Image (cartoon, rainbow, N blue to C red; front, side, top):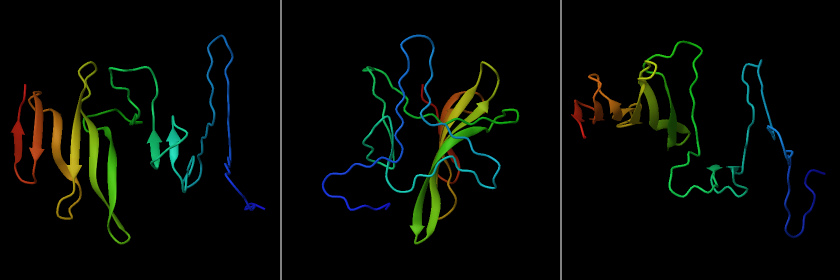
Length: 171
């Protein structure tokens, strides 16, 4: 039976992979590797129910990423988002995060995004802007704040309240 009667504390594990490398030489361990292709819709993994932990065995959020090392005075990135194009990179290419919320029963809207957008792809002179977009009055999320460089290549911070831009420069 897939649902046996259990009494007391029970811990179940569907798949448990433990790999231990050798003691010398260059090594690489891969616990699980998945590559799917060819169908109309392809999913490497679906996790329905429960929390997913990366770097933690006790996740407390739907996705909980934890780093643990000896760093005590520097930022340690816990997440990387990457956009790789099959074309030629150009201004406007980027990657971002979408924040979607249910606004009425059964209706989800992207209420905000944070995007990293390249404005100059010149080798050695690349500029990336950090752009914050929000939804106002039911319209799609649009740019409200941009940190980066302006058209004259000056460092800038641009606020957009929906009308004329309000620009200011801080040095």
